[in-house]
Amino acid sequence: VFYGYIIGSITSVVTNQDLNKRAYYERMELVQAWLDYHSELPRSLRRRIRRHFRNFFTKKTALEDSSIMNDLSPELRVDAAHWLINEDVKYNPIFIELPATALSGLVQMLQSE
Image 1 (cartoon, helix red, strand yellow):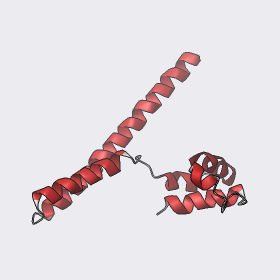
Image 2 (tube, rainbow, N blue to C red; image 1 turned 30 degrees about the vertical axis):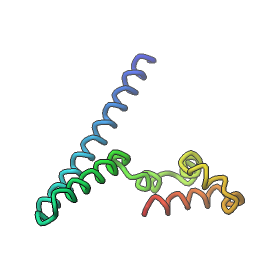
Image 3 (cartoon, rainbow, N blue to C red; image 1 turned 180 degrees about the horizontal axis):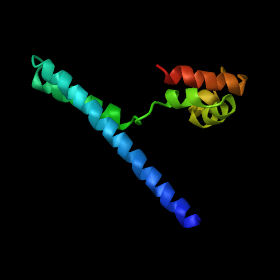
Image 4 (tube, helix red, strand yellow; image 1 turned 90 degrees about the vertical axis):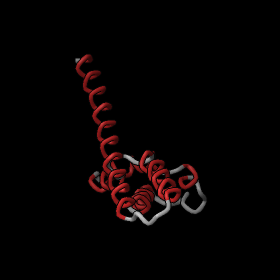
């Protein structure tokens, strides 16, 4: 049973990496298509735009956090929000008295933009 669990976990990690990699390349293809359409842009600007999106897309996952958070039960949403909220926000005096459900709503609002 433990062996099956390990194999399943490894498969899950590899599959997730493949999804993220595929999403990255699909997004970069769209950027390249846009750049090809706008051939009037100078080469140096096109390079800067590609570099920007390369950095931007490597920091994103295949699925947006907000799409996952929206499908969670309220209880799971609160628990996940606890771990996803930046420490600076979580312990900011403005939000310190905010109930956990309100903080999870805040996470959803911030991630949907």
